[in-house]
Length: 72
Image 1 (spheres, one colour):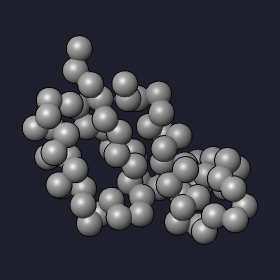
Image 2 (cartoon, helix red, strand yellow):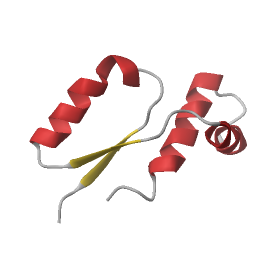
Image 3 (cartoon, one colour):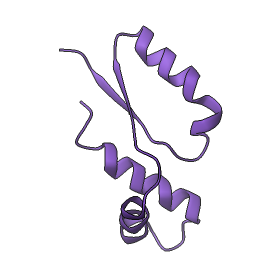
């Protein structure tokens, strides 16, 4: 069974996305990228992230939650 690797579409994703997708694909993994930030992603992020986190880091939490059941 092929491994599935999740890449959250947050923080420096847009700078290194191609590199990480190619890296994991070459290792034989299937790459799953979280969807673009939606209202639902924002709401989940704000609910679960620590209050002290900046907004960008909170959004990362939301994207990780989007991926958690889609990877192995």
